[in-house]
Length: 29
Image 1 (tube, rainbow, N blue to C red):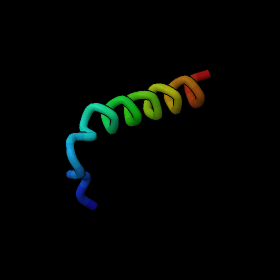
Image 2: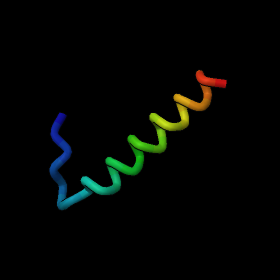
Image 3: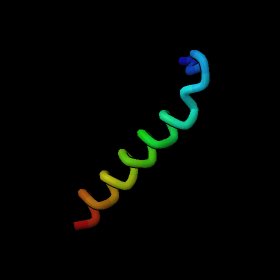
Image 4: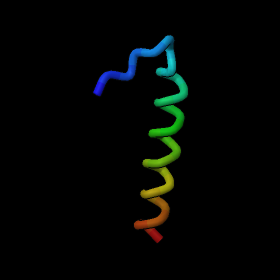
């Protein structure tokens, strides 16, 4: 699984961040 198409690093980091925070809030509540 390699994510090296152009530079989607920022997008991937943002998506992962949102997902992690979302899961944290979901399971934390």
